[in-house]
Image 1: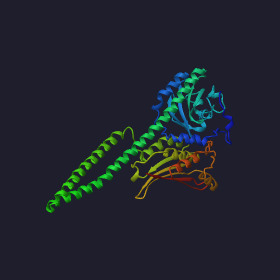
Image 2: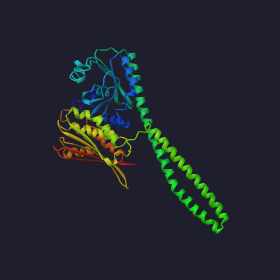
Image 3: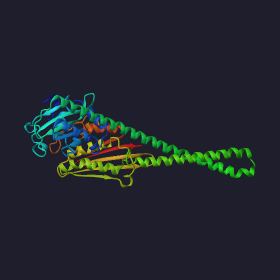
Image 4: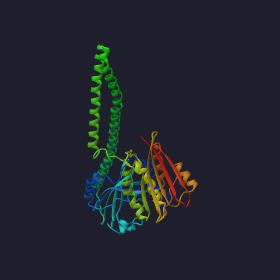
Length: 412
């Protein structure tokens, strides 16, 4: 077994990298929707299983609370609690992490994937390294029988892991280009509309002078005015043509390249990602939106990471049978457009000192209501991401009476 995990065991039994906040920031920087990339890595996870000779292969990303399975082969899996995963140990490794017999290891022998389907016994993981020693997840292979991977196979798995990271970086660049393209289209659209007004006024004025000019016998003036009139009409027709082409291009791209993101889409994604966590603790999880503004497009940058961490935290500190409610509101007026996100729980609540430590970015997570282990930096990450979007973060809570997190983010 190859590992260097012991140096970072902290006050809980969980292992946490020294660079955990930097690691989480790097992961959040990819701004991934964890449900959308199954097919993007399908060929690579299958190849990894074939190389290793195992029945299962997974691409897992590890955030503050959850291990997200980005793509899988041989095992239908979307997510699991970070504390239940083996890949959290791989994230700590410089090279790889191997367990010959999970059922004989006290850390894993009671996990659902060991004593139940698929009855995994062997594990081998390669960290997904994005640079500067930061690992955001793992490419792992599992099997019901012990394996002996020779150095050539291990090297091939490392190459596959590198390709996974390269694809993630490519998706990030492409997403950035899509946003830039959308910004250019918005500018073009604005320019077209802005020039239409002045041109219409010029043409209207020229038309009046033209109609009255014959009575004044202003032949020379009429000649210039006529030129202005014709030129203005020509530019106006060109503006209309640009606008129509622009609309047609956006219509053709809306279903493929630039998908609109609004409160309805936001709600759907949150429900699909976090309902399983709520169900596992018998918690009633609801997401509400404002009907009047739920179809207005908004930038999705970092919103899933911010809200998802708040929801996971709320579920963690809410007891069996409790409630967690997320509210998504877009406030639009002449002065500004503001996205308001609330996450309210019926959980254990926070003391004043706990609230202060969260808002100051020095909070360290404690264990959850069902014994979930704390990993410390989920809310610190949330605070950092909110500030990067020029937003505000407020906490209303009483110990034993639940907590409400309120986030306000200005929208362009």
